[in-house]
Image (cartoon, rainbow, N blue to C red; front, side, top):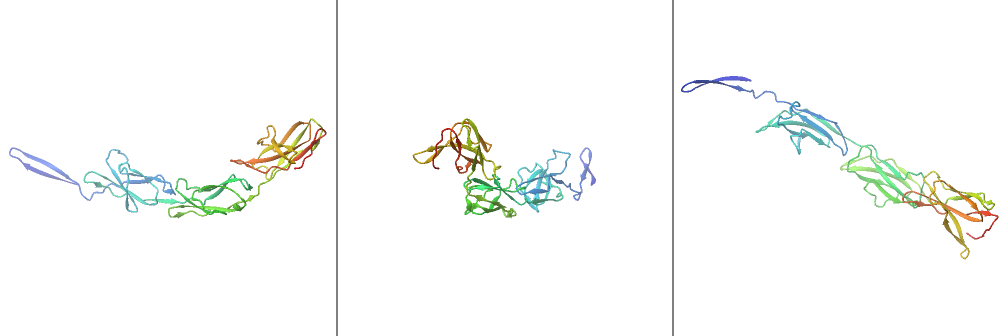
Length: 310
């Protein structure tokens, strides 16, 4: 910095004045660039903040941003903050005035993209045994990739046209048994393939009905028990009386009182006075899937009884 004095002669007076000359090589200010996080998940973003003079909010600076030395378009240059979703080497500088006076470039901040973990295939419902005719949802979950626009690829036991979404519903048959795995794709990035989950589909089950006692005195109580494979797997139970049709030598099924969808696999009949046949079946899921009806079981009473062929 230098100061020079000048003398100006006028007709009646002499005026002295000085000019302050700034050295053109004086150091420019250097902005500070910071990031709330330097790791951006796939589909996420981080915020960068550029500040020339943190103590002044009215200094008139606008901010210019660069990624790998390429200008980044921003909607509000005076904001001093941007959100970025791509990895790269970022820097900024400030500018103000007309013509624009620019600061030095800030120090670089490196933003890296983090990749999600290996996907996981899940089945809903998560029962260990699935039966032909049940509806199952197969889902691909990518932890750490939330918010990204993924396209999904599937390896499945029987998918002529695999879906590109993260889940699909199938009403299974035995041919759907096998392994299922998935992976996610976003632009040119592919995740790993998930571990294989195995779906085992069995034929529709038929529960086994037992009665106790099978012989009783009129007016006594009888207990029905309905057993299904994997009894803890969400079954509800339905209880029926077998009503004989002598002309057809067959029977129809009449739902017993409060015998629809019980949580317990047993049902007590009080005060039975005559011989009768009973059947049960089970259901689970939404929409509800039903097993076949059990074979009829008879409770023989010393009172009235009817013999018919089932």
